[in-house]
Amino acid sequence: MKPLLPLAACAVLLLSGCSTAASHASGPPAASLPASTASPQATAAVDEFAAVIADNEDSWRRFQASVEQCSQAAEGVSPDDFSRSTECIRDARSIARSAQGATAKLRALAPPPPAIGPLVAQTIAALGPWRNSPVLSACQDKGSGICYEAVENIQESSAALVSLLSRWDRYTQPSDTQP
Image 1: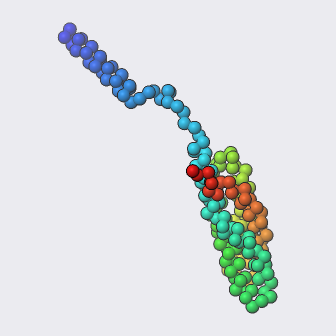
Image 2 (image 1 turned 90 degrees about the vertical axis):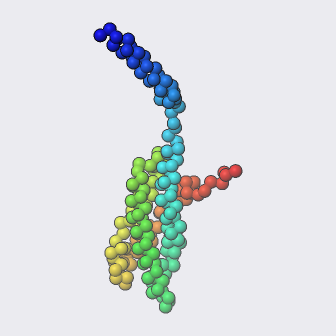
Image 3 (image 1 turned 135 degrees about the vertical axis):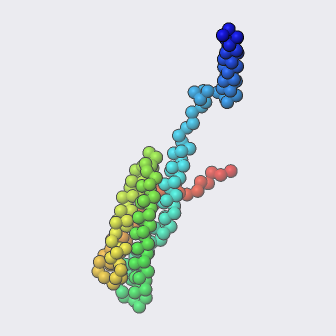
């Protein structure tokens, strides 16, 4: 039994030497590494929210800009009003679908970073009349009163959403600070 004792001692020394060398080879202990900051993650999250807005912004602005023409077309004064009115109904249905999609994407990204939390909440609220509009089902018959009312409600609520879009500009517009 005496010959095994020196052999066991050598094995312990060899193994302890390997683990010490391995720990030095892998770098400093985790506690001595600098902590990463959370700002790159927050910036990425802001960018993700802004991308949802940027993807829809042009169509939302165009829709709001056409409200006056659509209202006139709905009155049916000129021969072209029927085709223009049909276009407006199609646009209102498209806007309702985009509001549903944008809301779903914004909610899927939740929670937003604190810097844009209130803006995201206000945007989701402003999308509500579009998202919840019965225009998709009500306008199966484009000449019905319920279709006209649904389109009119979407048109009336468009100004509230478009006014919020300018508050997104700092997040959706490319920066001019490139070298």
